[in-house]
Image (cartoon, rainbow, N blue to C red; front, side, top):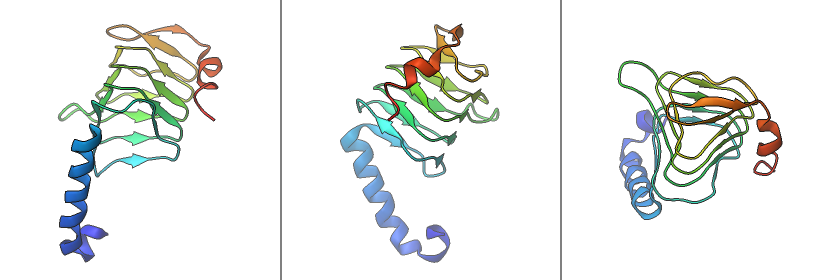
Length: 137
């Protein structure tokens, strides 16, 4: 809507957006569909490309959520926690109540209530709902 009706204001919005990207070290694409409750526990080095994010996403430092050119973008469910350095790339679907361990690289779909770790990420537990309750208020 802003692009179509108020092109002059779009320039200022993009300048403010770029200023905040540099100041806080968090890059978020304009074309995201982000639910409520997005939390950056530690900022810096966070990149969120074109994607769809559910409610209550908690992200620690150094995380990346991004599309692979020509293959699609990730879709994240509700109550997802991403620990430091975690990456979610490509056309993957992350279920509800999922914990992505530190430095894990997710390239395949993850079901609900799973804990994934490693490169490439593998499911190690189906008790993520116990872990996410500490981060999702």
